[in-house]
Image (tube, rainbow, N blue to C red; front, side, top):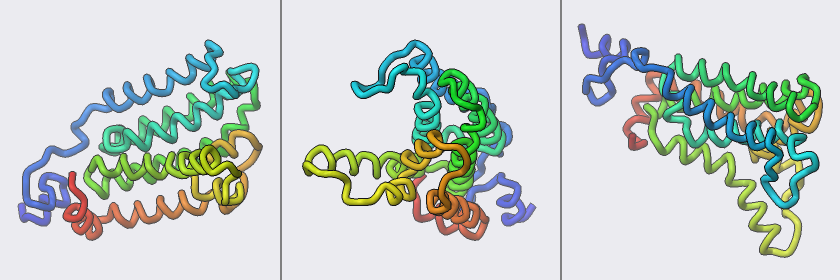
Length: 226
């Protein structure tokens, strides 16, 4: 077979080295870790363990929000591992929905309330899947995704805590550029929220799709360390 044919089949990387096809990897590891991570906040909510001194009462009423944020942050940190191939990605994304429904039932809120955060997390994790493919599972992907997921919230907290004032940005800006603010907002209201909340995450999805194409991956693989 020619060098080009081997690359298209996934048997060679872009440096010409032999690699194993990703389809031979087991999904047990990613799915097992994913479920352990998601069961932890569910168990804490069921046990009524307060996660802050300002926790709502009863504690389990916040289970849906806690589950949504856990999925968002955990999928960002563990993206190179969870989305390392198409089968693991499908299994991880498919198992996220039932955990949201379980959290909604525990919080005693209508299951339809899961629609907004569930769709947002679907777009988010699909974006991570394409970007994992584009960057060949680089650890820098997880660092960048986690930085975006929690960065805006941390910066806002530091400003409010140490600048003795409220955030300089309006709430709509936080929901647009902070995935945590966006997904929490969706857990507190029916429907899909405002359009501006979806702009950044959909943009990341589209750029991820483009970047995962073969001609884009050749450039990205040479720029980003694995």
